[in-house]
Length: 390
Image (cartoon, rainbow, N blue to C red; front, side, top):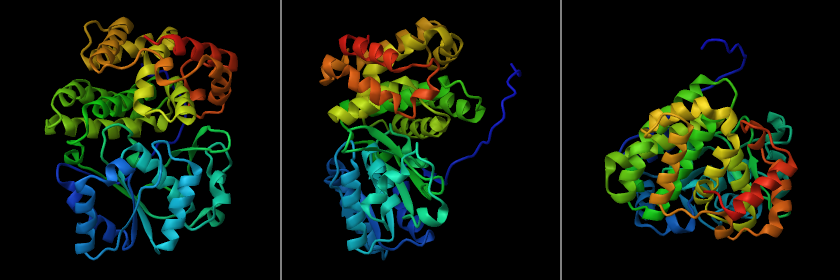
């Protein structure tokens, strides 16, 4: 049990304000951070909801001067982040507040990185590129994250997923000196989420916890967060799917999602490597794509995850505490949520397998998959997933 003597550095994330109604602390949190003219980054479907107007009005009443930006797609692109940066400068903003799902936080992080710079600097923040020195990288726009879904888990961490419009790869952008200054977890903001998005975003969070736990690296802080996330979400996701007004289950989901997001500091794996690139090509909903791919990835990794699968089976209340029990628990969830059985049902074509396989080898999540894959193995996996994943 105590035979792992790997060395490393562990860090804990940011201030997290949580609880129903905690959105009412936004003005206070902003002022404490010296924020007065925030750019509110919210995806178009969220920006039209009444609570966004309420938040904007509340900020104005409290003496802040917010400006709303929502001109970006479900998988934000570098071009759209550049538009956000232009809006930031045109309206003399001093900060960014992301309110929405994963796309809002991805766009907000991309905008925050280049808020005071021009477009040509954007891909200097690719996570696979040596980070720019502090003097050259900043200044960055202070960032507050307010998730309105229980899925992305991106509210405490630095990375944003942005599609490169040149090659359609979905890439991770970040700088080690840039991260949210605070986040707010208010389950009441998720109550109106439609049933299908409740399932898809919830599966995204569950996949985060599963893949993070399965990463072979030694990081018990992340492993503990991942397992606690699963323990909270395993019963709660079914409750919120069937009753979206269940605030206790909604709270369990948003806290579990945050914990899963903290856990994937450790890394992710094959599900996300596939989902990122499918999303880059087809603009698919990220959580749905993760859910479709999950069974195939579990089967691929089976030979080296048996023990951890047994632990997750016990945590999730599976019928048997082994790989088959956990796998069947996952399949039961997907069936209950009417998840498609193949990537073909998401529009992925056999002719795209070579392109996707090459793109996957460039993804930062692939090296932390429990079993290694080269380009040929990625292609084999994609072809099988196009036909059927479960």
